[in-house]
Length: 346
Ligand SMILES: NCc1[nH]cc(CCC(=O)O)c1CC(=O)O
Ligand SMILES: [Zn+2]
Ligand SMILES: [Zn+2]
Image (tube, rainbow, N blue to C red):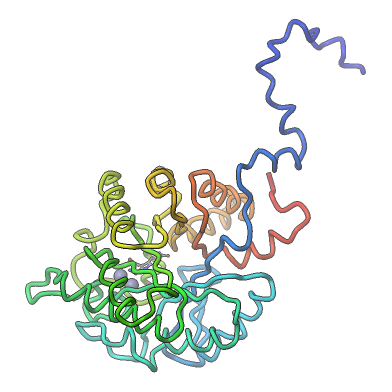
């Protein structure tokens, strides 16, 4: 009451300028979110190593480890208990030799196919996705097969990628997600699945707009997949290339994808927004990549940001931009945070 005298009488205030009354309480603030984060939006990346009993932290990717096929089940069990719905698998070869064709990508005894089988068996309700690419398995570290001069052989690459995708699907993967960025691979994968009689039950999620840049470093440490020579600029998109991204998304829809991934995420929210318009009838997925995750951790460790608050802020950005799915290394954190009574620290 003591302050009343300091206020202007209400009739002298521009009533239409008052917004704050609409978000003065935590509950009212949640009402301003057009969409809420929920557990079924999260897809958790898992690195599966060829050492069956390994559980090895990845130094550049805080609190993320590589798991051997014997170690992955107890780890995933602890997350499924908390509401984990989906994982995406990446293979890591430490002891297995790599070759120019990435032969071990779909080795029946290799880490990905073995992990698909145990995860499907142990967790009937878990959606199991496989990233499909050759870079973790090729001796040269590129995402496709090369000509002798080191340039990409697109035709051979997409044939090989389609074969790998079909073998993951045969092993039981619900979804294959080609991340190689070769031209025409979605059509080749879809055709391969159809020829194998699997097209009606396997989800194809295209990394349609995948940009080249500086944000995949920790992943390449984790997967031991740095290109031995050159870079990926001839197939991953140039970071200013919004038009190319739109063309790639339209192309992949024509070729039969079931969802669209935009990657990275935070620096590419305009592309997520473009995707939500251009691909309005498709689920759009934002991939919060390893470098983005590591940066937020580093900033939190420096005391520059609060980890939970910044993670919510980043992930709400994806929803605002139009994503409905999020591939995120933060998934285990959100499984806890979303159970809290007031989950949004905002
Ligand atoms: N092509 C394989 C692939 N699939 C996902 C990522 C990166 C994911 C991340 O950084 O978290 C990569 C690495 C790359 O293209 O270099
Ligand atoms: Zn790859
Ligand atoms: Zn690759």
